[in-house]
Length: 130
Image 1 (cartoon, one colour):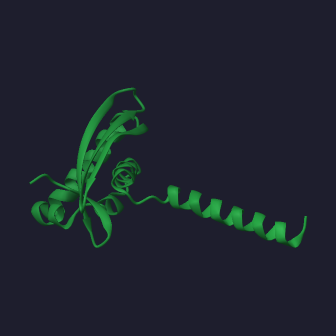
Image 2 (cartoon, rainbow, N blue to C red):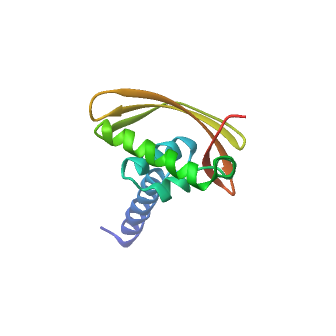
């Protein structure tokens, strides 16, 4: 292989690698919802809390919010974890978004969740409807 062909091949490899990394680290609304449920499943309450909007935190307060997240984690555990999360719909309008996901649990049961999100300081956060 000539040095020029090597450089082109290396360049393509780097571009493809970066493209794959960006898709894996996606930070869009649907990825935020999926990450939130994944964190709850793992019992990572503090990390899940970081994906909630400041309005949610302000309205619920720390104690109620933590209790709600812990209850969600327990519910997921009772259903034998999450087997799959499928995004059914994602709509983005400026700094607001809505995402509908179908969650399939380890025990075979399913839930359809409709999440509202808001962009705060450049990151998508789960919000509550006005």
